[in-house]
Image 1 (cartoon, helix red, strand yellow):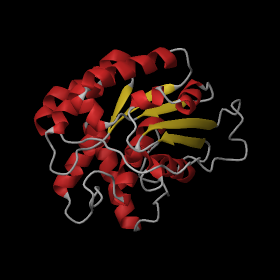
Image 2 (tube, rainbow, N blue to C red):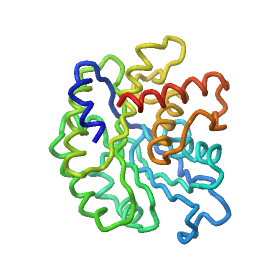
Image 3 (cartoon, rainbow, N blue to C red):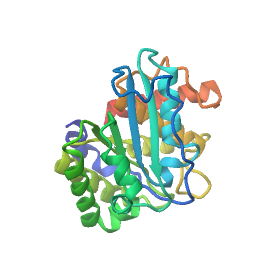
Image 4 (tube, rainbow, N blue to C red):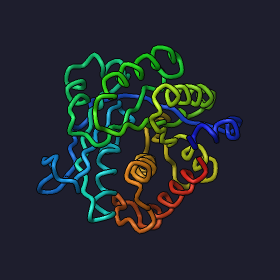
Length: 253
């Protein structure tokens, strides 16, 4: 897998993480008229499982829905989100609503986001959660992705720990890692006017959510970003730059 092959080459310069906070909005993507019909092959049903890094700023589910709506008109998406502040994947495994959603066979794609503190301070427990989710999802038709997030402000030491965790998670499951945190690290190092982190140093700014969603959309949809019309009400030039950078980051990693 490309992420694993590149890991050793980039280990000395990585940076990213996760976190959590307030109760999430109950977001469901706008979809199309027949979004609830699983027999409609033009509808991609997507579920995001995570915490506040997933739901902040209308959530990556909202922006990924926007990218689908602004992209290939032959493919529509219905995006759903189950995210609670502070939640680990173990919390979701112990939550009946989360389990019911995860076990629903309607999903074409499921994106999992682990809590960064859990992944770095309790990686063995986090990996056990990943293995338990694999036991559930192996019998389901969904393609599963792991959403790697970014480093907290002034805590770049979490980088190597997260790389270790997601590498082991990939090896245990063969689920593709979306290396948002790596592109985030590079962007933050090179740009001084657009900030991906919010003022709290943990959660994404509106630019950060858009950037993370662009990387996620590019991987899970296999659609290009350059001609996508969705800009999340950002300045068109800023949105175009973020899409370009997200695309280039994925080419590197």
